[in-house]
Image (cartoon, rainbow, N blue to C red; front, side, top):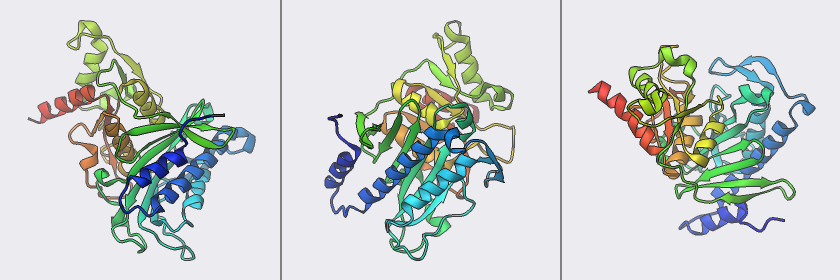
Length: 337
């Protein structure tokens, strides 16, 4: 039996520190956590439930949907639509925002999420996850409009992700540090196991899809070339490369031991400014990483300062150990000067 701080206790203590707190946010977060536990169960059972493989459908990004993408999206909606805490939801898997059904009360928060990040890896048993972000609705108790969601990431009330790996973990920030909780399956409760996570400033590990090298902009090519040159190059140290192709797994590794993750702007598809979605991936992860002492930019500017232009806007993402992110960002600015 564990004796540590449970997530429920942690959230209630956080609520007590907040002047004028009503408990609404605590209840909302509890609903999100219940959804993550249910998703963990479905992901862990996988083929036993017949939920593996792809569907004939595509999502708004033109990506083939996995059965689990749709199932996990339904779980997130089902857990959060009825509680009276939300004015609306938006998901990477849905073209438009999700209005709260008329039989339920409207609340003062907005929830955005990627229900199963890295789902292309689910069939090969690599860690996948759920990413979420909570915003304040501009008008409490009014049905959300699309523009209500288009807030800079700096305005997030909370961001988090669940990672379904060898253990199920939930990593959260409310803007006072980043904290990791591990699911104790025997009691069905998340327990604080990684308080105040800190990303080391220095690192010798970088993560990027090197097969896209020919499409990268010059500053990213320069940075990776220098890493590959190792001790004999201008950086004077050897680097290791990692690439999981599951953002949750990449960020979790960086939070645990440092590193830099890059999905930069490239010319592979000139119509797309980047690969990752600002609302569902870049903003929540940038908030989590910054609160752990790291940095997150597009190569040109801080991600959390961007004003979103649409629900499914894509951006370049460079995040992780601060000194390395600053180096790559500096190279972009040198080129622009």
